[in-house]
Amino acid sequence: MDALRWISSRRTPQSRPADPRQVANSAGGYTVELDDLARLRRFLTLGVDGGTYYAAEQALAIENAAVVARLADADPAALVATIVDVSTRGAAPKQNPALFALAYATSIPDAAPAALEALPLVARTGTHLFQFAAYVEQFRGWGRGLRRAVSGWYTGKDADQLAYQAVKYRQREGWSHRDLLRLAHPETVVPAQRDTFDWIVRGSVGAEVPRLIEGFSAAQQASDAATWARLVAEYGLSWEMLPDAALGEPAVWDALLDVGVPQTALLRQLPRLTRLGLMPDFGGRTAEVTAQLSDADRLKRARVHPVSVLVAQRTYASGRSARGAGEWTPTQAVVDALDAAFYAAFEAVERSGKRTLLAVDVSGSMGVPISGMPITAREATAALALVQLATEPAASAVGFSQGRSWSEPDLLPLAISPRRRLDDALRVVDALPMGGTDCALPMLHSARAGLEVDTFVVYTDNETWHGQVHPHQALRAYREKTGIPARLVVVGMTATRFSIADPDDAGMLDVAGFDAAVPQLITEFARAS
Image 1 (cartoon, rainbow, N blue to C red):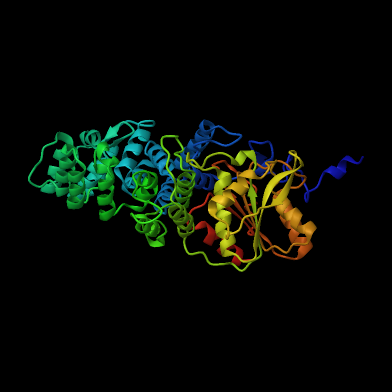
Image 2 (cartoon, one colour):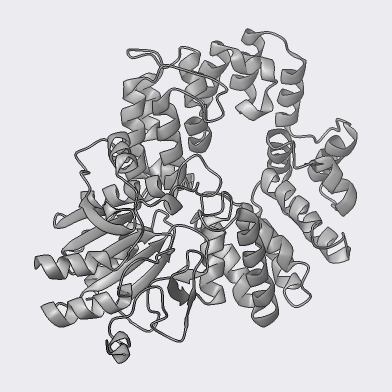
């Protein structure tokens, strides 16, 4: 056999590099290594909780911390700007990665000034501030600059805003507002601010203490549902401002719903409202709650991430807490509303008019949770595929699955469509036989079958290693054979440093995770062809 026949720049096994820039991924296949800014954005969006099938979360955390450190030295302005952008756009389902990166940046001299200045933009609630404080102590002490930044976080709020933060977000991660105020020593000449600080630190009630604190204090002393309900109505208290005993009272939740439960809190409290009998199949508060759940404007204003809606839908429909802490009988109207809310959580998505093939990686490596939430990358990608199928009339979906054997992956049609319920579609994906991942298959299959495809969209963790040709080589071969300037979008679902997209090919796009803007981003990229 001619050994030279094994060497080709057009068709290279994924077990060998096709380009000097490629590196071995965690599964042993060769993929493109992302630059640090792209890796940072992926980390901020997806986090490392749960790790991946091939890489433990601790290893991923160390890798991504090193990325933050390198950027803090090389381009601190870009580092902080990216943290702020991902955080404020609501691109990530959790704030922890952004808060961690910001805390780390404060320990690097060149990055510290910009990072400290960005604190109120990233840490927008008391809970965020407590998480930041816990992270920051992993890297540095409480110097003057850090104390000044925390002081500014408090003095930048008026008395009513301070009171709200103080009674709603009381403590977390071993920190309280009292602890931070004693460290920061904020100074103010505004009487209402000063009295609010005094109440937080010493419990003293001055003449200018906001009215909300009066209501909070009365609620802590009360002991019956009628009083709690009255205080909720009178002072506009939220559920976090009430003692635990109050939260088991239907009358209290009736009052809370009358005042208005924020969208994120409403998603989390659906099981409790159901157990308390407030959302029966007919009557009660069901119609009101379901209308709020699927209100696109409310979802947008609250920056509700689609993954959060997906988790709520999966949890509520199951009738059982992910931690096994409680059970309930789901109300069908609520399940339907959550299904609608998932689609409503995305920005208005225009159709590209392009022939689109969606390829979903359902391999074992996609069974890891996203951002530590009770939803896997495989389930999240299936849900996102539904959004695109609902948008694009000329679109179909396939899954990377087992062929003749596990080591010979194949593509199987995914029996999902926008006409199916979200939970039904997810069960279809969960039931698909797992196999190895060969992300070149969509292009190879389309070429063999004579399919005319304008846009390939691959959802994967980029741990591809099977196959006799790299995905970017398969795409170029498909273009040559069909004459179609086909494009490839790779949606990475884990915070690794790998991508199958060629960064030098303008017809390939790498996307980190998914947020409300991703479907429209894919549409715009497809239209450019």
